[in-house]
Image (tube, rainbow, N blue to C red; front, side, top):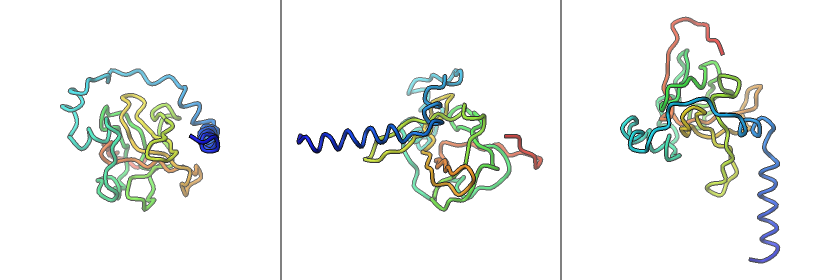
Amino acid sequence: MKKSAFILILAVYFNAVSCQTSSEKKSETKKPMETSYNKSDAEWQKLLSPEQYEVLRKKGTERPGTGIYNNHFKKGFYTCAGCGTELFSSEQKFDSHCGWPSFDGELGGGDRVRKIADYSHGMIRTEIVCAKCGGHLGHIFDDGPTATGQRYCVNSLSLGFKETVNDSIQK
């Protein structure tokens, strides 16, 4: 490999690492939630549909515009389809027109969703996973239209939903 190509690769890597926000760095070092969801691959395959298994356990992505929660705006809580942990509130959801459910934040002050640097597919992104069971949810981007500036882009297949009966939702 030529010296200039090697230097370019190093520069891209160090730029990606240094571009992480302090909240991303903090969340990567946080102790994960206590879990009883250390399941074998066979147990996950029995628990999840084949499509959910592909997204949650194999880091797949559903086709844009196909998910049941993309245009879903009932009041309630979006949960992890793998373990049932409440991850997002309907008050955090917005229509980003990207083809996947989008949220501008998460519940629990950052302890329910882990952020992991993702260098796959020739891109630099931040993957989001359930902190309790490790299920792949999607990715987070810094292009959200709300005050947080964030867009948690989540696969519907990785979510469940608990509707609330009253109008008040506690974050």
